[in-house]
Length: 147
Image (cartoon, rainbow, N blue to C red):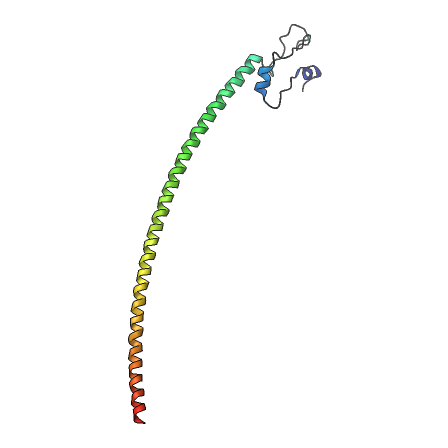
């Protein structure tokens, strides 16, 4: 838990863009006369939970390098995934086109078969009709002339 003197020395971090605010600030305010040891020499005491500006700058710089490295790696992976997606899409479109052409060929063959079967069916119906109608006409002529 922090005591009142420690709370007074806490510098609030800006919420929007720390780097711009930090770089545009000429220097951070210094509290003179208050020290962890109670003296005014500006040093000493328990500093386990605190860092110097140089340590903070080094840590921020290291984090920025890590972020840039992660962004670069992410961009490479996105480009790789994009290439794989394009390849899969091209393969899929090729398969769909082949399927469409095969289906069109089968539909055309079926239409030709149906046309042939239709002609054969009409011929069969004509022969059957003729075999029924011709004897019927002969019978009618025979009946009419017997009168």
